[in-house]
Image 1 (cartoon, rainbow, N blue to C red):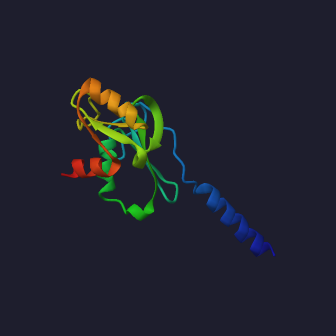
Image 2 (cartoon, rainbow, N blue to C red):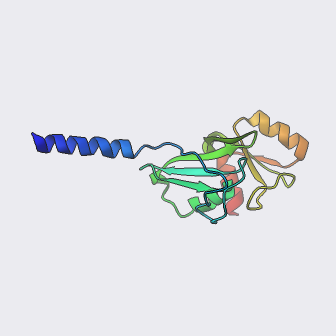
Amino acid sequence: MKVIFGISLLSLLFVIACKVEPEEINYGHEACHFCQMTIVDRQHAAEVVTDKGKVFKFDAIECMINDLKSRDSSQIGLLLINDYNNPGKLIPAATATYLISEAIASPMGAFLSGFSHSQDAEVVKTAKGGTLYSWQSVQKQLRE
């Protein structure tokens, strides 16, 4: 009976310890997993959470995209980016709209910003110029 209780308790602790959820970025103190630069920009940061709950933080969306080239996609639980219009707010990468505009600098020089709403991206594109992309198309654009 004690063995079964012990195994059940360990299993419960394992499940609790492996939550697949975002983690707050400590801006100005944490380094980008890909390029090792300090993460300071609240409009362009990104995060990968594995299916086991391990969190990798990035100073720019382009760093996350470059890092994804070497990851097994089946082990990814969450892909998150900061919403350009709501600095510091993480949103799902797959549903965001992306803008590459040379009028908006990003930490690694790809001029890439992400928006939670396509209408917001359109407004900024109208004001600053550039090209809009989906998650799939921006990955392809940056890999070429």
